[in-house]
Image 1 (cartoon, each protein chain N blue to C red):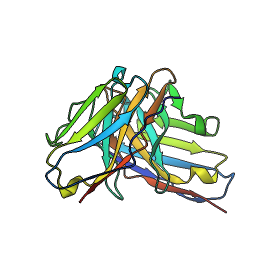
Image 2 (cartoon, chains in turn orange, brown):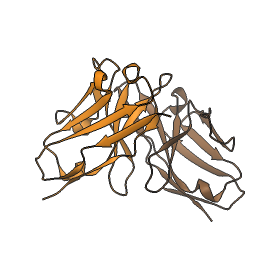
Image 3 (tube, each protein chain N blue to C red):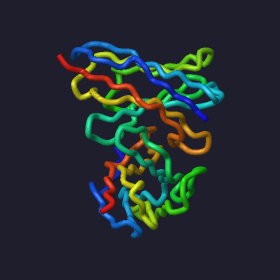
Image 4 (cartoon, one colour):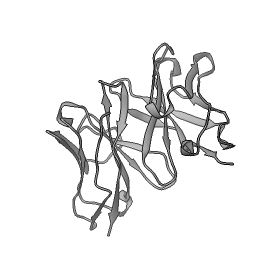
Length: 119
Length: 108
């Protein structure tokens, strides 16, 4: 069974930075496209960022453009999200999600890591 | 940007049928996927490509998509189906994944 484990969440002040990690196992990580999806407390799901299997193609939601950077290290089976210039509205649980190899959807999810932006 | 609209809530008695709609401009031309999310848990894919089910998802879950509305249907509803449900599409014009606003299903 696919395993995705996020880490790196925590409390950060507005304007600060944080780096999330997602450790992948039990599948060939380098063959799959990956995403970050977030969910603010009591709110719906919001897609954040996509990265292709090689890392050469990246898509981002308008809300995080120029502030967040997605990356991956296929040798380490790891996905990352560098979050800069954080705002209160970035407070959310951040999920690492694997992209299906057949359709643009999320077929496996981690349990999420909570990021709280507050002074 | 592309917008998907769902009713905030749907209530259904056990054994009855729940229908959750997902409205979007010409959504019938897109492939729609549905996720179930229970409190404190990560979402789970329950229907993909309008109406197909991943392995392990009961046949009670089905979907359809036409015109401006996609629909997730849960037949013979059980207490364990109580959850939030989200539709999702890929918007090829903006290279964005888009989620619906979410629907809370309550089993009476």
